[in-house]
Image (cartoon, rainbow, N blue to C red; front, side, top):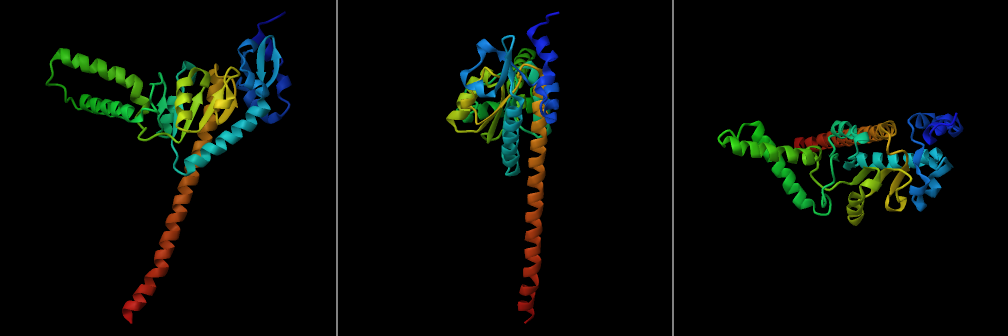
Length: 271
């Protein structure tokens, strides 16, 4: 019996597990690319084969590129760097949980033009949203008429949709993390203009040349995106741990230095 291209690919997925360490990636469905007709020419090095007009992503390369991307993120976090997540598709909704866990900003509804290149204006709008939100929570608008309060509530709802997940952003990010750059071209363009490094989980229809750390994978499946988020979570935790350890070591050295210098000064006074 002949199944759909996707079904026939699943039947042959065992062929992809040449390396046992790739099993996790295969099980997450990361190997599904886009149709051959939609493949970006520069993505050819990321493709293993084509089955029934569907591209099969080379998971060995995905694994290699992922390691480089995660090492870069860990290093950035270790030195206090901030990430900005961009993932507006429903399949990537778990980005909110990831961003909130580490108090990092995220764009989860739609990218506002100028979020990076017109940063000051966006920050003014974000500050206005925060003040409006605070005022509403403290019943500061009770003195207004019912019609005015309805208008304020409606405005707050619209702003909440755009800015709620951006609240932690106080300065330009050090890294942009994008899920499917093909549907976030404006964000990519703004980051490149400001020379902000871009880490992206990209499907076969994306241009890898505009990305600093492209990781090829299935950007349409929730399981594949969640797998990528899981790896990001591990990298961020490692960066936080290294930063904490470095801070503790620096504090210990400072205390030791103060202890050594203390008696010397005391001896001078006693003499």
